[in-house]
Amino acid sequence: MLIEFDQAIVSTPQAEVLRGVSATLAERRVGIVGPNGAGKSTLARLVNGLVLPSSGSVRVGGLDTRQDLKAVRRQVGFVFQNPENQIVFPIVREDLAFGLKHLAPDRRQREDRIEAQLDSLGVGHLADRSSHTLSGGERQLVALAAVLVMEPALIVFDEPTAQLDLRNRNRVRDAIAGLPHDAIVVSHDLELLEDFDRVLVVRDGNIAADDNPAAALRWYREHCA
Ligand SMILES: Nc1ncnc2c1ncn2[C@@H]1O[C@H](COP(=O)(O)OP(=O)(O)OP(=O)(O)O)[C@@H](O)[C@H]1O
Ligand SMILES: [Mg+2]
Image (cartoon, rainbow, N blue to C red; front, top):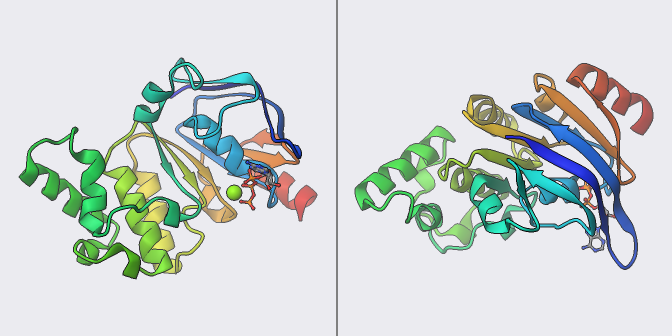
């Protein structure tokens, strides 16, 4: 799905968080790396309109996030850096069912889809668990399942492996690799991005490097370590 940033500036009363980003992304797997506080999450949030540009524009599949916010949201799923923000229902399967209600009106079909999605991430046994009893890593996997089950055309992941042990990290890596749709992944886990199509390095509110993963990650290691 085509994403076009045109001189996108995001400013707060305190500071300019993004300083005029221009880029056109058409690849299936795009990675974003950069130092803490550089503006990665803000850039990721521009893609589904969670953040709107203070000036400039962001278009997703030809839709302007400012003018067509609802349509953009339907096409772009977002997996948060902090999954506490994402799981809202008291029972895990209810959380997955919520968004699916209008997509899969048949209850049996919906339940099948939810169980298949949880199973594929190795958390099928958590379907009837109370959400607030989940561990950090389990929560991250459930939040991911809740987005994947909606099958959006594009999914933005903000540090999807931050709390995961090695096995679950590999599960998430495989889930991303196997996605039929496009993905943008913000990560400090550089290995995760090695086989992506393109990697952006965000530094100090700008895209400081934009290249294939090997070249972009080399630049990041040389300039930001
Ligand atoms: N709404 C806001 N109001 C004030 N400052 C903000 C706001 N949103 C972001 N910032 C600041 O903008 C900078 C970039 O934030 P952002 O979350 O995009 O960084 P990041 O690259 O994702 O960092 P990290 O690797 O730590 O997650 C930070 O200094 C942050 O404090
Ligand atoms: Mg961040």
